[in-house]
Amino acid sequence: MKNTIAERILDFLKGFPPFDSLTHEQLLIISKQVKVSYFEKDSVVFGQQEALHDCFYVVKDGAIGIYRDHTLVDQCDEGDIFGLRAIIRKDQYLLNAIATEESIVYGIPAKLIEEVLNTNIKANRFIIASFATNTRNPYSDEDKGTLFANETVLQPNASSFTEVQSASFSKNPITCIPNTTIQDASLIMSSSKVGSIIIAEDNKPLGIITDKDLRNKIATGKHQITEHVEAIMSTPVITFPDTITVAEAQIAMLKHEISHLCITKDGTIHSELVGILSEHDIIVIHGNNPSVLIKEVKRASSAEQLKQIREKAQGLLQNYIEQHIPITFISNIISAINDAITKRCITLSIEELKQEPPTSFAWLAIGSQGRKEQLLLTDQDNALVYENVTDDTNTKSYFLKLSEAVNHKLSIVGFELCPAKMMASNPKWCLSVSEWKSQFKTWITHPDTDKIMLCTIFFDYDHVYGNHDLVDEMSDSIFDAIDSYEIFLNFLGKNALTNPPPLSFFRNFLVEDSGDHKDQFDIKARAMMPLVDAARLLILSHEIKDINNTIARYNKLSELEPQNSDLYNSCIQAFRILLRFRTQHGIKNNTSGRYIDIDSLSKSDRLKLKGCFKPIKDIQELVRVRFMLSQMM
Image (cartoon, rainbow, N blue to C red; front, side, top):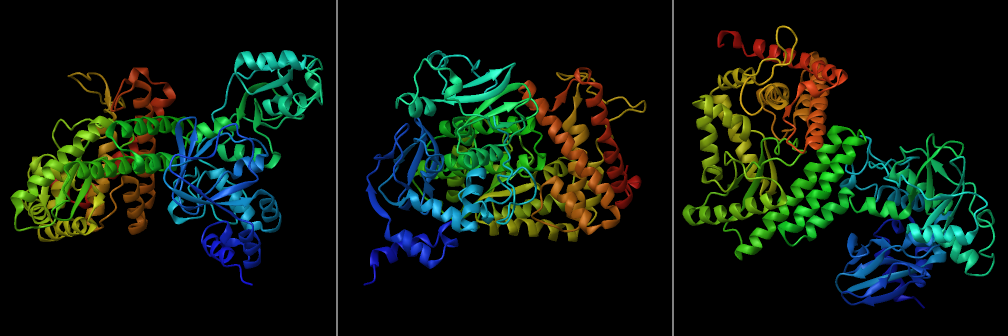
């Protein structure tokens, strides 16, 4: 007789990895042994320090929150697996699993996972990869480029996995010598409030004892507490250098079925012990994983909660900078988090107004935010466009109220209100699509200093929320206006040469000669903006829209003008160095990083900065010649 329930379970599981890689026969065997459980909201599936269940779990309906103490680490939705890590470790649960809404959960017998891992290579690879990268599906398009340090994408048949974040470990490991008694070692662990102790000689690790060893070897009576630690320690220890990534740590722990790794000077057991990395440390790191932060953003119910998440993102930024992660990757991650925060602020504000928008609209990030180059918490720059309507007065009134609420929430998060009021709450920058088109045409066909300045800000916009068609219509209008008044590009080119190369005739840095930042170097205005302005001008001259990022613009220009690819690639490298340099300086001094005291820099840093200035001079010369600006200067 056909097992209808098992068939329904099979139909569900086959739609999610790693079950989608199993044969029908394998899936049917599993489905027949699945235990179906119902959990009310706030009920516990398993708790921290609880003994292992005989199964791991898959969410059928609802949602299960994974908590470290009272901190939400992750949320499992339909098709997500949880409780599997403890099964593989063969140890008690380190986290709480609690239903955040009414949920139906499938319990899959633990014994089946070993059969799957041993007989199905694809499923085996998926599980290891998902643990190593902390993504639900490490092969999905959604996760591509967001969680990996290298610029290449992890593929199903890759042989190694690299997670972007280096593993933070304890740099003060608790140790004892080999002839220490188990009782004394336990007392040391207890007083130090740690779950492990390393047995070392001449500061080189010989073995390790964990809470698990004490439970399994002492509490069971197999050994006496008067024996020496050598009797129960696990040896040899697994060692890594301090450059270990989260992925390497995850894989090593899974492979060796352990929960602690020793960190030594050269990564071998023959060198000096410098730290210890536990599975608990990995869990803490995952709390600041980009995908986890974005999930937290989507669940946040207030600007204050969003502020806490953005502060975590700032810590993430600092870690990435210290780990020398590619700056392009960092900017993509931070921009994704900033966009998610902005979207949530908009959603919360609409809910507060208790009125749906009267027509479709789009929220735009402009300036450095629009270029996805805002890494530090600086002031906000944004705008709003809404669909043309007959009753514009009431419509505009609604969107100004909405914008004011959003700008206020973003200020609570940490993005200060723009002193120049370049924000959507300003009636000048909250317009219908026809008003934006008319304004762009005026700026382009009747350019002056102020209008050109506005173009350099508002032409770097990025769609964040709402109707993308409105943004496309705005972009098309820009090129239509330029086609009707091509000399505008010459005016824009003249503006791109406003800041001369950052070195004086005697190759000294050009610094501010007055004001609050006297004798400091303005890395934004004198080094970064010339590259930004040139990229914008050149990409507009090719009528390319939807590429607003400076590095992406130079990459596209290199493709369009292969004869100038060497110059454009030099501009890319220079901009990467400058962006990283400004970010490092800002983090170090808790500032925007814009103004730099040259005297405080090392000789190598000065040389590194000066090396970025030649591409600035060369790109400005290309602009001067191409747009015949010598006649206009």
